[in-house]
Amino acid sequence: MPNLTIEARELVKRYGSTLAVDRLSFTVEAGRVTGFVGPNGAGKSTTMRMMLALDRPDGGEALIGGRPYTSYREPARTVGALLDPEAVHPGRRACDHLLWMAQYNGIPRKRVDEVLQIVGLESVGRKRVGGFSLGMRQRLGIAGALLGDPGILILDEPVNGLDPEGIQWIRGFLKQLAAEGRTVLVSSHLMSELQDTADHLIILGRGRLLADTTVKELLDQTSGDQIEVRTTERSRTIDALSLAGATVAVTGPETVTVTGLTTERVVSLLSAASIPFTGIGQHRASLEDVYMAMTREHTTFAAAPEDERALA
Ligand code: ADP
View 1 (spheres, rainbow, N blue to C red):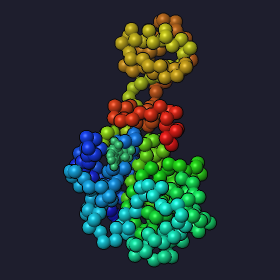
View 2: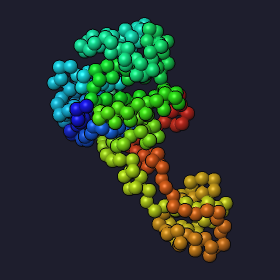
View 3: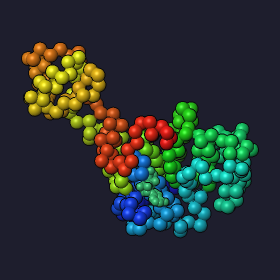
């Protein structure tokens, strides 16, 4: 596989008064899965569309293997993309949709059966797409992205709508594509979907780059020196430790998290005040905690959990 990068250079995109992408620069390297993470509305799809010349930047540029997408005569052989799994005519058979794409891109028709098999749709290839679940449409979209055996894959929320087995499948599959030396950029609004799959993370909030980092670096940077205390007497614990200058947050029915004191000091303060506790230890932030804290001020639309389900 050729060693191709995707580069965003000072990309800017405005929609009326909305600044969807704000001077965004990063490089996506080959041979690893790069997660493109940010809350809904952060600008991920807009950035991907600009990479694929489906949207024109108001500033900056996006380069695919060092060149603009439009400079490729047969782009499907270099870049495969999944943007909107619903963008297939429901009356079409899956194989006809892929055949049409293959013909349009000068790709031999035998490749259609190959990609249907790769994504596990060989048994429904002759069925109409209208009867497909969202998960099956996602697989069909991925089949389309793979038609030209491209070195670069750009996948927008491919996990959306997949069942647990489909999620397992796509995780392994993305890793395999990267291990073959391909450049894999995959977006999600949920960190949990990507934290075990992505080697590298690009985190976006309101069109801006918040972090360009590995999962490990992000955790190391932010886990800090918080201490978690398990106690049935939360309010007395909060009073005693706050008086000593700590910041204390309630993190569970019987847990508080303390910042600003050493473990020894917490133990001695609680003992001195005769406050019982059943456990004490270093608190390790989950990647989801870190992500939520990082993107909190950058969320344009914070859905309540019920709304989130309704939208999903
Ligand atoms: P994400 O993919 O991270 O959810 P988007 O790139 O879809 O974010 O959207 C970024 C911002 O740009 C949002 O505020 C969105 O409402 C706005 N936006 C995206 N596409 C359009 C469009 N075609 N017209 C107007 N506004 C748009």
